Image (cartoon, rainbow, N blue to C red; front, side, top):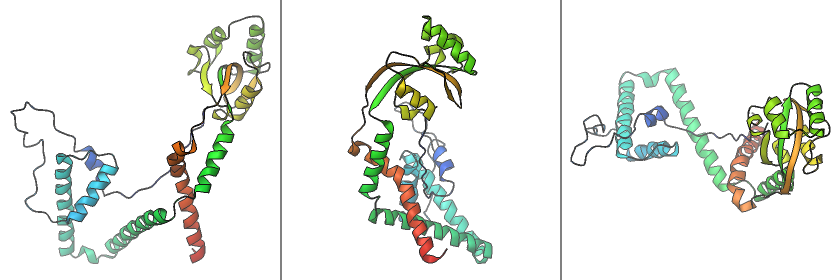
Length: 275
């Protein structure tokens, strides 16, 4: 039931880089006096066909994707780059660089690299405005509210079942016992319906609204209906909400806002150029 914020991001990567990173695990540890086997570390190429700049760029891409910098990774990248450049030379000898299809692929690859470089440079010169970040921070803080609630619930399929449970609670039945016996929520029923401390904004609206209107130490007088079924809710405790200061969450706010900020700039460019 809790909402999840999904943040989207895009990055350029060296072709086949992901598979390469997975295939360069370190060799098992050996006794101090033993030498690594021939297969443990890829052999260094006799000569290099690539530039140092190309190697550095691919290495940083791999590290950026989570690979650990190591001698094994570097040697694997050297062999990979040598293979790519060698095959490219053979393709040129065969005249494949004159092929219309290949030319189109090269143009698209070049344009993609330039587009990514432009966006990176533009973001450095035009970071997300501080005012936008403060606005989002204030909106999230207002949405969460100034109170947190410790709640538990019992979820059933029918309103009539929920009303029966409320009647049993009114007669003195234990909430936790009824939750274990009758709730269909697999995540909380074995814990007596416990959901822990939460802001009402963490739940679907009918559930969150019911939390705010149910007094501390009481259960909902009427069943609460959501898309999941019918709920009987108990508010066990209430406390002041703790919200992190702006500077602490600013990096997350920037990451979240960056996509929309880029989209706005791209939309302006498209409008300006009539595309």
